[in-house]
Length: 426
Image: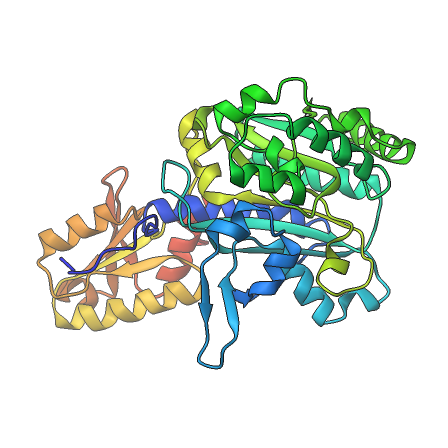
């Protein structure tokens, strides 16, 4: 056993669990690829200012949770705590918005880092798949992204995911609401840190999960009552498009989410089987973020779905994803000549697209057959000197136990045909 272990609040992703994580990522990414989203990958660390400006100085992410470091050259960097600011920065740096084809539609997958108190469903590194549509203000775009996320959950077989929906208004109507909310919050019994947050971004106080704070928020003014006509109309169009697409949602006037850059459409996917960490994904519109990080006005919308949380939701519902076998054919050589021959067969099978493995390490026939069964393979290919002298190998169906000789010449085609449900031509 190693003298080292993974850092507190982290985990290692190993087989067989890793196959489920890969299947979740693929299920989330598939509808995005079909909808014109191209893949983007950004560095694991960025300049601290990107997040302090973009995510917001009042957020817990910036004030408490970022992993920061100073390089030997004196540059302050942070491990990325979220994906949107990085993706927008990359798109701006590459001038993708100037190509004349807006919105720029991008998707990404990666690991993100936050210094949080570890608990079930919350780690100090976590995996997400995200999508961003940059440079267009259109309720159909907001609806598209919500529908793509809902379709991904449905494709995974999840039935307990609920969609919460709200509008946070815009720069026209939010100031009046902000002032009304500040007046209300200043009259509450709050700690010094929370009172300071009232002056920076009072909406963040609404997102405070502490019961003693939540109890005092009854009667707080709601943004929905302060929306301007333009925001009301925009939000109603999003709601109509979701309803027409058969995506059920619950209007949640207190939904603000944990990042400062959101405007108008805001949404969260939750699963009641996950306890206090019920959010499995979410996002919204962030029309002013580009300007905050030094870019031109680029109204945008996006989301991030947690792979870790989605896996927990699958387990909570007892949903097992169909994961393809890592090995279809396992070769068991009996003797040195058979080792050379079957190793060549395995290489040929792999090149033909068949998942194949080999009994390495010079094990006995009995140990090698045990390894074949443990591998999950459908067939074992067994050969000794007598078989090779006759130009055949023994192919054993590991499900039924049936075994029969097959000519070595054409073995790859025969196995490929059997695995696909057919039989090779005679």
